[in-house]
Image 1 (spheres, rainbow, N blue to C red):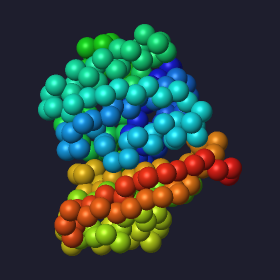
Image 2 (cartoon, one colour):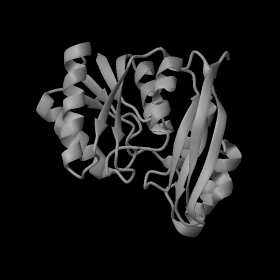
Image 3 (tube, rainbow, N blue to C red):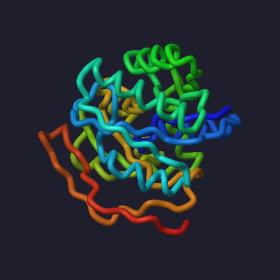
Image 4 (spheres, rainbow, N blue to C red):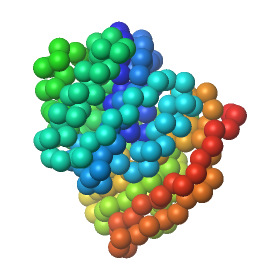
Length: 228
């Protein structure tokens, strides 16, 4: 079961890779699409340029593809990226970290069906609260790298998802109906360590850029790999 992971550097794609390897898949490569459109319908954009360091930490080859991020047209870029991975690494499965976004899942699945490869989506339709608990128990170190929802404020940026943070997110779900795992784009994440990493990532420089009280980005400037 040779696989490629549609990889953003966030918690969902990284955890999907972790789950897939646990199920016996051999991850031959990671696929990252770098979008010019920061509001891409399909692709995570926050700090995507550091996916290369994460791939290095995992010792898994990373294939990087550029896309203008135009709605629907970006799907052709994804199709070409998957085809390249099939030719270069002979993959027969695409691993995705979708949780609840039918828009994204259906489009990825349609492309995979056209190319006649399987899709493995190990966290599709999981309970979001249980998922975050499992993430913490599996020793994932994940920081919040972007926010875009009522109730989320500047102090969330750069904070690690731990049991205290999960409680805060659950409270925001009760008050403002945000998706606890951020599947609606309420927040984005960046993985600094997990069981797949041979070394962990240390963020050396970063800054916060806020558009308004509930929308902002942790802009990572510099990282390095350190021994675990």
